[in-house]
Image 1 (cartoon, rainbow, N blue to C red):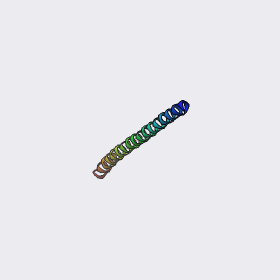
Image 2: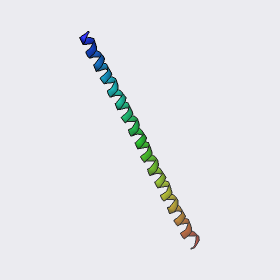
Image 3: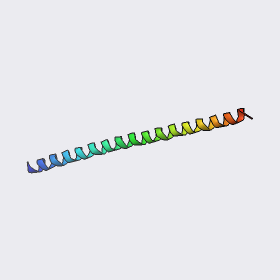
Image 4: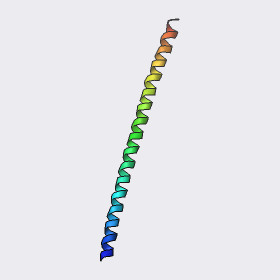
Length: 61
């Protein structure tokens, strides 16, 4: 019976550990996706500004 109690406690500790690892993995994935979206959006804004500059300079020459 004592051995069963230790096994139950170890099983609950392992379950808690795996749950926390899953939560951390999910949060890291969300953070990486957010950073990728921000970098892409900033790149698009920069590219549009460069395209506008190129168009404006070509038009007035």
